[in-house]
Length: 254
DNA sequence: ATGGTCGAATATCGA
Image (cartoon, rainbow, N blue to C red; front, side):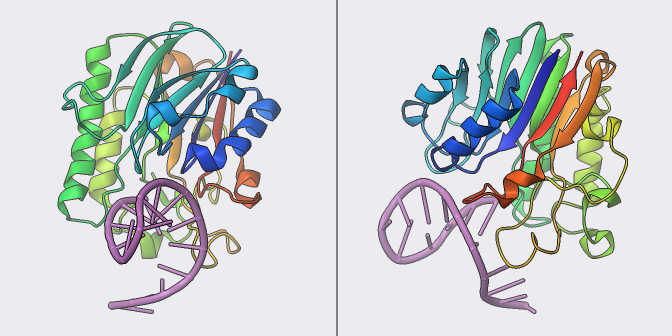
């Protein structure tokens, strides 16, 4: 059994107790984190280590920052996209765990449809694809905040959302280009129903009205998809004190 | 069309 999870924690310093509780309760072997928002020297590792987890991290001041937390040994840690500049935003880290290439990805938000950062978001997904291609044939898991809701089931109001940021045809095309490599959406292997979200805006009544988006995913390459026995999200995390605006996604592999 | 709330950093910006 390999239990893998992903979670955009929106500051690991604020969310450290939530992450520790989650690890104690769910005991994932591997947890991909996004938006850690700390430089590596400030990453709080002590309590994680006490629970038996080590951390591979690619931190950054104020924004971004990704990490892989693992209680299994890992090797070949690599930071960034294959063509990233040395000072690129810290949005991707990879490590090999038990023969599986694990990626923690924080896809750019895109800010506004048509803006330069929107085009950079689309390009980032294509560059992630090139990064996967360059890594070779290992079974792969890409966990992360993709900032895209895949289909009508993944937004509370698809008519209103169509063409908006997070639900735009160009974003859908870019995501499907990435997944065309045979990657499967772990959650959708087990749950076909609409209305399961991974993110709710902090503002207004979105949580109370369950007006969220499913934008966080675990994508599995074909050999791992065949081993996926369960997948779920943990919406209860969104109702805790001082929650992240995202909740964890978990998959169990044989 | 705007604002609503967080986090980092301490005025605003990003989400």
